[in-house]
Image 1 (cartoon, one colour):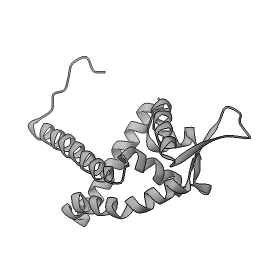
Image 2 (cartoon, one colour; image 1 turned 180 degrees about the horizontal axis):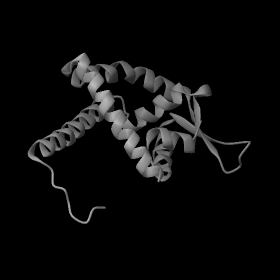
Image 3 (cartoon, helix red, strand yellow; image 1 turned 180 degrees about the vertical axis):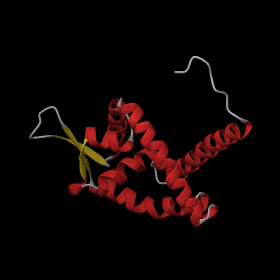
Image 4 (cartoon, one colour; image 1 turned 30 degrees about the horizontal axis):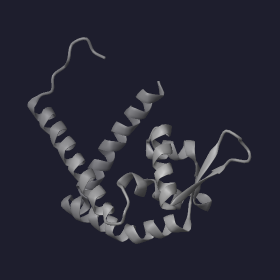
Amino acid sequence: MAKSAKWLTPSEESAWRKYIVASRRLYEALDEDLAAHGLSLSDYEILVHLSDAKDRSLRMSDLAEKTILSRSRLSHRIKYMEGKGWVERQKCDSDKRGTWAVMTTKGWNAIVKAAPDHVSSIRNRFIDQISKADQGNIASIFEKIEKVLRKQTAD
């Protein structure tokens, strides 16, 4: 960390604060919308990654990386989701230390039921509020930020 702070300019501070407030409100709204389906946004994201994977299963370590959750946090979510019958854990035959997270039929049905409402919520709360140019700019901006963060965490 720097020994002396390079304070934010008024425009930098405004951009930062608006991002923080809007992102938290958006996350909260999307999470609340999914609650009507008995899912959290984290649960939904886990199910999305599993539904996209071959055989609807991923190694826990790969799933943790994709969801950007610590292994312990993911383990906690998976335990909860197992209780709901959405996923099950299976031992990895090729690596005795490895474990697979596998989406069940009940998990598949949960995401299929929630997906239309979730996509409508994303469209209503985010996509429809910005232009096509804004979409490209946002994607470009956050791709740059993600690259920097990945590099910083890899060091």
